[in-house]
Length: 298
Image (cartoon, rainbow, N blue to C red; front, top):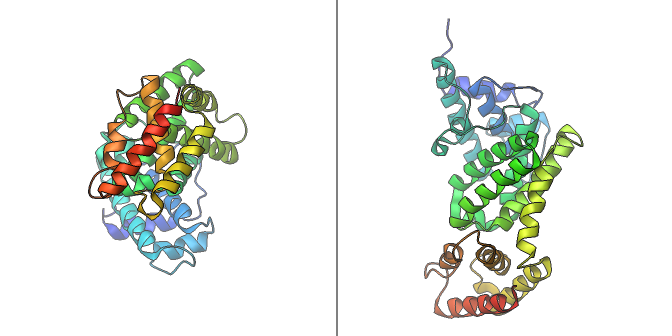
């Protein structure tokens, strides 16, 4: 007899996987959704303890965690597991659409250990860079998760193929306002998480791909200029800064334009200087910082 496809069934599956013990390939879309949902809670709660995760999943208070954020993640995870159960019932394959319906269903890793590492790298990168949340919200968080789960699958490719794929994604994201420096940071986090979870060597070609992005950026905007740009923006705008690290983001966007990754930096600068988040004075000061970056970039 088939089990019902409902929120209670999804909740039980999530609770069954709060111990984070499942390993190997995840061929069941409902289980894959549960693994992703639980791991996002690991990042949100800062804990891998099963009892803490079970408390989060059942509406309990988790010390130090944002209760609204945890509740939203639990609700989303439950919905994704329900969608996974529907896929299970119709024999549909596992792909990114299980946990990111807007993705179009591209291929992601199904290895449980690597998937958890990918989720941690994605959510950690988002939490470290408020720009993601302010501009792209929960949709951006879901894409970060599935993009990360796709990126980790590149580890087994030959280095030149992995670099080619990463450079393609960098162009796509930069055109949408995410300088390739952000992907560089994400890849560094992904390498660290994969090594920690699966051991040295499991990261495969990913460090080479991250290094390729870094070298391309540094030819035009080195790490010192990124730091200087942040200082200039902080000094010029103070509390009027539209988003933390605005200076480094502008410098990274300039690097992409100089390297031919994008045609210009309008996708980022246009958002930063939009009247909704920057008044006329702030816009003038931001553009002054941008001019200073342009003068220093190679």
